[in-house]
Image (cartoon, rainbow, N blue to C red; front, side):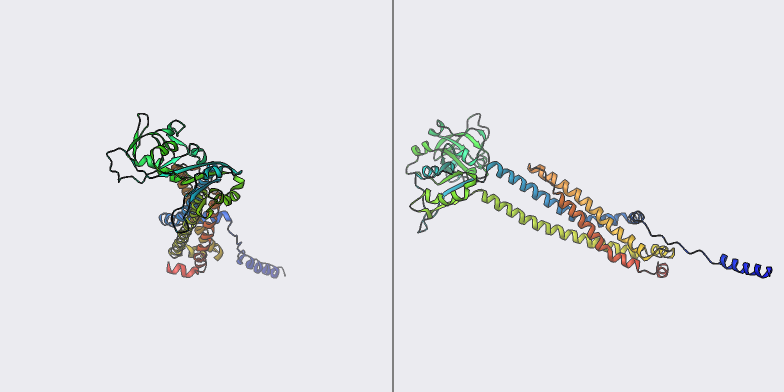
Length: 417
């Protein structure tokens, strides 16, 4: 009996000793997956960098375009805030027969009597040419026009003087001229300290000032401006206003605009054109928005191309690393861990390119904005959206290579490697 028990115990013990312990399957942690994926990127460093470059170019385009657009728009808005959007221009239109109409001489005084008008200033075009000196042929006018202006014109159009001074009650009665910024450049006008003359209609005029660019009245940039008093003395004929600049109450721009035509020329209100110069800036802003959308489309295409490049590289990586896949599967790695490794590698490549592109896009925005004198405005939401796009693209394009790697049988991988 004891022997039987002992034999039973021996058999039982033999069976217990012969049966191996059940393997404990442990899942890889997120940190392990990231470390393993990061090591996989170092296998082909050059290929990894080139793959990330495609995504970086797309993110750079997105961030740079949005940043420059926001900076430009902020600069334009600052100009509008400084200059105001309450400037209206009144100009003669065309008559019923298609001929050029004229404004009455009393139109400026009538416009100034409108309660919502804060200031009104007129200019009068003159049939004259401007030359640097009397030795320049009269046919070479450099595209510069001559106008006679009221003394309060700079206050109305928000014009500033770059050098010299504006016309006053004394200089407006003598041959003195103030040049627009473009006119001064075309005439090669230098410092005014030593006294500078230009020739207008065969007569020397002393240049007393040069204007800065006038944003809301850019036609003045190409003009030589003289006083109304001297214009009446030296030029024959009537000098009707060719344009009236009107500043109005900012809250009453639309109502005032509707009555300006009837007020300026009561007998023919349809022959009066009323416009707002700031509308041109608004159109410029709309054009910038359209350009921004176009550039964003190009950036999205570049981002898509970069994603396709990552997918191609990951597929090639799966083919090249079949031995590694087979060894890991033989050691007990699951399909999920194999697929997760390659998916993590794809996401890391895309995120690396996205981060590099975001940094480069901010740098490009800063450099260009500084060169243009704009305030640096980096839209952080597009930056975050760009990084999110990189994450999504890395996940999508890495899904197929990951599934392909997970489906590789270990025996086939070891045999074909």
